[in-house]
Image (cartoon, rainbow, N blue to C red):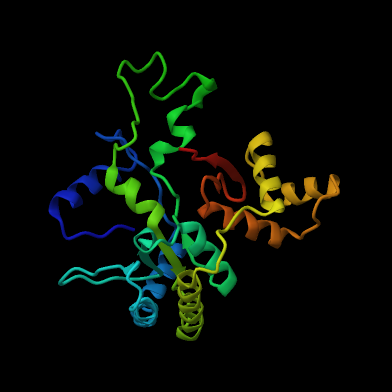
Length: 273
């Protein structure tokens, strides 16, 4: 569902939902069922209540970093509103001599499940965009005989995105106020630990290194596939939930990381400058 108060956007949306005819622009033909629509209408009535709780959660987490000059909260513009199902702030630890690796280690020691970096880099920095291999590995859609243009993804193409993405610190805010308060307390503890100068930078554990190397060599894998290979080789034994949690944790790491490659699979990436 899409809503807008912009007439131009409204007209562009309508051009893309033509059913049963040849559309004038590239269009999708997705349709929700009547049952989905009925459930959606009923759920919409609950949204205001959710937003009240989420905004309280945002206030609690904003307060947790209020005295920290190197973590800066999301700014809501005048007249704007925010629906913060994910709380976020920006990391500028280098201004205080605190590296991202140190803050990650402090978060882990404090038991705070904040992620740093989101996808780490803009999409054009990922190898599957730089070296596309769709349609029989012919380099399509744009490095193939069907396209005459020149494609280049140089560093600095989107300088703001390249700077902002690795700095994003995020926490789940789509929960109860009590749970958010627990996260806020752990976040404050992590800040204190990072500023103490006693925390060693977070490095990859032996298990994480094995997972990264495995997925690098074999391509995208599911958690169940990873734990099966671990068992076959007599490495660390773990259940599927543990494997999934470790792989999720590797999504916000540098320079070696994982990303979602389907409903359950994870793919390998490295960003070595």
